Amino acid sequence: MTQAEFLNIVMPFKDKVFRLAKRILISTEEAEDATQEVLLKLWKNKIKIAEYKNVEAFSMTMTKNFCFDKLKSKQAQNLKIVHSNYEEKGTPLQKQIELSDSVNWVAKIITELPEQQRMIIQLRDIEEYDYDEIAKMLDMNNTAVRVNLSRARKTIREKLTNTHNYGIK
Amino acid sequence: MVLNNIEKLLEKYENGETSLKEEQVLKNYFTSDTVAPHLEIYKPMFDYFLVNQQEQFTKDVPLKTKRTFNYKWPSVAAVAVLVLGFYFKEPIVSSYKEYAYGTYSEPEKALNEVTKSLAMISQSFNKGASTVGYLDEVNKGASTLGYLNEIDNATSIIFKN
Image (cartoon, rainbow over all chains, first blue to last red; front, side, top):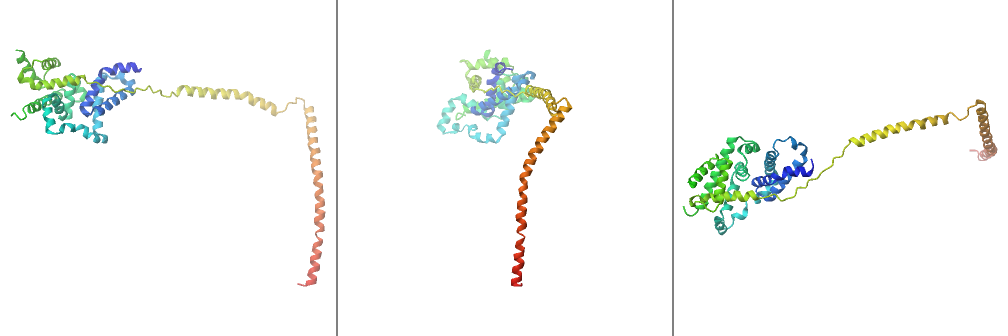
């Protein structure tokens, strides 16, 4: 397989891999590294690519596993500062400004979700995958995906309502 | 009517029962400018999804076409060299044997040659051996030293010890 052929296969979903990695790892730089690693792994195993039924789903699973490994590794301990988004926990004035910026709030709320739900929100609401595809990527069953997704969506809505009504009710 | 529909979809959405098409309807509705005031809470959520869909991976991936060393052809070449080596070695050995057994075909001639060369060897050997004859002179000299013993005897008589 030549480089061009490989890129043709990989190009359509490399951004999705990156966004999933970013959803799990939060930090953009870490996500970039992870994406690079995943793509390099695919490249090294390029002989086997033809055997995979769905390269995209396979890559997403790979990304998920790789990111979890990264989080578990000792190296990830250094990332804590990046993860906590410390600049957003600033003065009350900054908080007030952020209140108006609801989109940022959504980002923050999603960051606070459990990993599982975060990934599902990413795969469903942003990447728009099928329930079956998501189930396959995450090694879960269809119902579990739906339940987690429902929980995540409700949490986001509740927290958004709370922030919206903060100081009013 | 539209609003009613959206509210129903939202409920389904929150229960995780919407299809991708229905979700697309919701996304279109909430990213438009005409959102009902009591549903505005959902707007940032869908806005966020839309924004995040645009994010791209910009880092380069260094794809190296690493050429693995193929041992097949070098080994074939090595075997070929070995085989050729053995094949061409044979003539050299046979020519050496020819040389070792001598080049004379008639025995008489060979005998003559051998006696000639042996005579030459003995001649020069004798030349060398004759010079060794002078060693006799040394022996003579050494025997005269025997008289020193007599001196010894004489002195012992004198001092009687």
